[in-house]
Image (cartoon, rainbow, N blue to C red; front, side, top):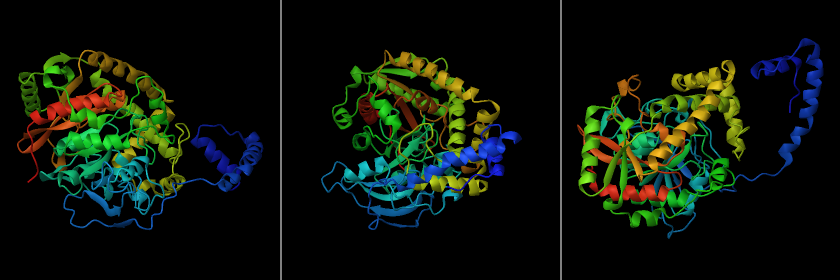
Length: 503
């Protein structure tokens, strides 16, 4: 490691709020260099990066991509043989999830040309289950927006109407499934980024309980709220994918922490959807705060009609309340902005959360972030600067308060779920907006989705027909680690929902 100069020492001190006085500068320089002197030895320790032979992994730039759904087309063959539970399935992977030997550019100029050397855990598990990876799908830059318009190469548009948004940040994953370019796609969800595009594109989108599916090999956005899950056309397929991906991973502290909780359980998802409960046995809670101000009247009416149909078919329905539901936005953003800024400043190194991170990616991000932050889009850059303000000028107090507030919100959801099997509310407040209206301030994409990330509860969106030919989603929220129950409820409800498909 290069020795630290006195001038560099002053810069380091300013960046991390460590006072460096003139009279101690030389002493500090010598002590720091002494501390760093032995650290080069770390490069002599053999480390494993998966041992993956990527020579047979081919990829190419996308062609015939009118909705800008793809980052690259690729072919990564399964490792689990022809008899795996996902054998024959074509899978798209959001381009913030590592597939070794295939470019991962995170829809950002900053990461252009980066190729990871290690598969994300979920990718390895999909391949072991017989799936074939056929595409990396487009997204908002660094998965940092709900729109589907902030990618460096422009917006991803809706397959139902090319003048409208697909939603984000897992925009390409949704479009690829909706157009049958892939059978399944993997997305990530920090405030609704699976469920929003799934709802806009008429799909099933599933956000599991936090920690149930490992985050190893997935580029961090807001680590304490990040989730990975599938987008598909049915609950049955969703269950098969979750069965393949779920389970503890020693490389991911979130999954280790989840596995240590008394209510933790994993598996049984396919069995649950194959034998779902009768509607007569279901208690559904309609969230009072899920409609009203901020929700279009047509979406509210579409939801009400569906709930009435479920009631008429035998389900018991009652109203439930989460008093501080509206505060989810402030809680989520305090956490997100600070964690994003801290991750960026750390150059992707997991100083606090631990776990294993691909060294190639971490070093690449750190160097590129330092040299190329000017190439970031303004929306993502604004989030980083908001987080910097929270950390530096406000001393982290809003973040600390938000961590306490999230527990209050989780407790209120637990109370609401105590007497019902699932909470029901619209997924998004409107049909997909037009591209030119992407940043309209009155449209809160994540109004009804972000609370599940804050509370870390499982949530699923189901296609619930259409308004003016554009899809509407119905969202169900369940209890922590009762993902099997939530999926079985969704399987019971799914046949009673109106369907639509792109022309």
